[in-house]
Image 1: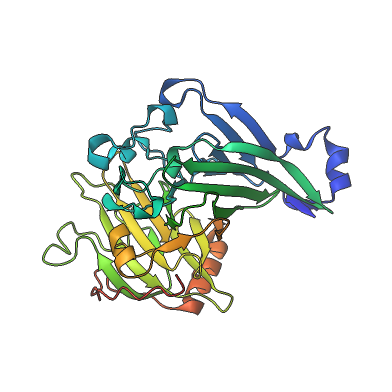
Image 2 (image 1 turned 90 degrees about the vertical axis):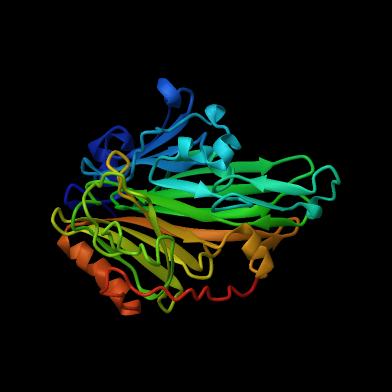
Amino acid sequence: MVMLNGRTYSRRELAERAGMLSQFAGVRLMELSDGVERGIRMLEFRTGSGLRFTALVDRALDIADCEFKGQAIGWNSPAGFRHPGLHEYEGEGGLGWARSFSGLLVTCGLDHILFMNTVPADNYVYSPKPTVSHSLHGRVGTIPAKLTGYGEEWRGDECVLWAEGVVQQSAVFGEDLQLIRRIEADVGGNAIRISDRVVNHGFYRTPHMYCYHINVGHPVLDEGSRYLAPISDVVWAAHAGADYRKQGVGYLTLPGPKFDFHEQVWQHEIGADDSGKQFVALVNDRVGLGFEVETRKAQFPCLYEWQNLQAGQYALGIEPSTNHVLGNNSARERGEMIWLQHGEERRYDSVFRVLDGAAEIAASEARIRAISGQPDDEYPAVSGNHVKIKGR
């Protein structure tokens, strides 16, 4: 049954009340037509519960806008949703990625994440190309998808909104990787489900790294908002040491926008429940609104918390990752790089869930606390213990 307007409906009952489901919910393909966004195809999802979000077909089917009952969930940066044709991957010494950085979900990969690295390219067996130079967070987020389908699917009296596409990151004498993405949302629901497969479409042995940059904005992020996670260890902090408290911002309780703020990043070791699921949330108790990210420990063994609290850029990032924050070369040296042969793949199954009201916030917090507590200290001691990632 579909829950809308405070009551449940069967498929027939909804059909009796409107000529098309789109009166209540649906997926619509449109094209942006002005400024830096001009020419980007976009899918708009409306679930009927108040959840509305958009997926940018021409930017890896990443989630751009997200709102619930008129309240923003996702982050819009001043860079906007820039058309990929304007993107300069090698620009600004590898930091040009920041000029295309905006939205609730920005996917990082497929063969590199994190800061710039130059890595060996002998696996591609091409002598003029002894190395590959990677810019910040890789290429995939600004590659257009081939849209393979979208629409609504009834499963008995339940209805699922969906979209699928393929993003191909390829080069002659280089990687040939495909991201096959499916996005789903239930009519009447408050959650976005993302199922990704990264497949080696080519015939070279190819490295693979993957990260979701999930960016939550105001009003979920505000003064007094809380970061909830089943943290067993604080592994690393970019600003640790003598300057750990310099900006007066800890990991747990968030302030309002700051001036001249330098980004802060933590890596946390977090636990999972008996089924391997792990949960992280940002909640604003004052307005009764939160956002929870559900991932799988086996797929994303690492987690970063990114704080960009600069006025005008105000965001909190939840970043599940396949690798430690140490980077590409370190992953190779530690034997933690994922190497894919032809036809091999990795799966990533995630849920982004809006928390509507105090009861849903409390339920999320209970889920997280049932796995593990978290440090009460805003500036917990950093262990430096990057646990060996096995099975690579």
